[in-house]
Image 1 (tube, rainbow, N blue to C red):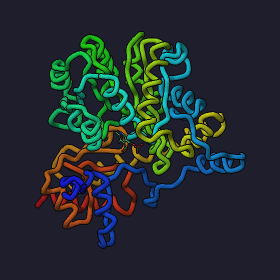
Image 2: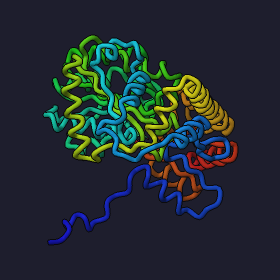
Image 3: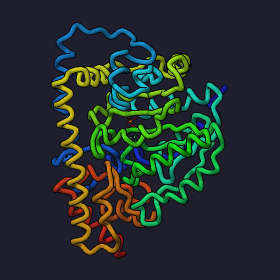
Image 4: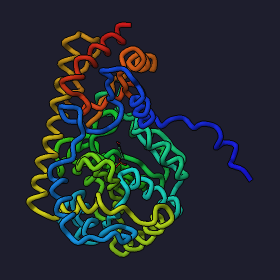
Length: 401
Ligand SMILES: Cc1ncc(COP(=O)(O)O)c(C=O)c1O
């Protein structure tokens, strides 16, 4: 026996993490990486939050254990993150029809959601915005879904093309899954308005579609409650949906792999039954979740003082991103780079889409050591006083080429 012949053919690099590897091996001084979605401070570092250091100090002082955790995670963590997304007094929480599962990051949450659906006989079609986070199509394809795109922004890239989006989703069949970004759409930074969220709620209800909301940036847009408000429009009486959350960015716990997957079912009895299938999906994948990141998140969320400190640090990250957006627009306008860049200042979250050609993206990398994804997705949180002007100069040069 031998390995399959396909395994001998090199796979294409990951569209985002592959670039980070290339960046790492680039010897040029002054290189700029705006490709991967990590927050950096003004010195270019991704620090551990102070509140995380304090939570880890407290955890280290406790008599710990490295015993396996429950398949779906610690009950206290599961309750706290459910409240963070839905609000503790939401009917879906108080009725018990919403249950959370701890997952290895947001990616793990998406994969558990996908496996749950495929293993319990869901529809095979999943609709996702075009564009979307590049890992979405490959993850859901690997889990056995047929991917259908729905248009998202109009030609300006600054507004949702409501007519085109809803015209496409009108072709969805009952049971199809619709993937939505809960807040801080990656890569466009453009989120539905409250009225558009209501319209999405009406559509999924009328056409009997299942929403799957990817909430990887709760608190990076306008605030913790504000960034959950859109998806709450979908949590109508009796309505069902799945939510995947990530604490990689908002707690700066990237390497700890902590996130959650929430099931909102029609009733508490249904939620309990679904949870048995969630556990089966987890058990046959990674068996049970890693402990440390979830312990940190639980320690912070359970303690009023630590929670308040986290919210202050989260707000500081949000403010830095907003300030970077304004500084970027100013730098682009100062160089009179053709294009209307003002929208970048009002978009939400870590990303902005510059709408560059493949050639321009390659020139940025080859001639200027500036790394951006796809058609010019940039991580706005990656700008520092040291790299903003070099980036703007490089962009001016490739656009003028
Ligand atoms: C839209 C979106 N979903 C999910 C994730 C996954 O995050 P995690 O690192 O927690 O797996 C990311 C991370 O970049 C993301 O941008």
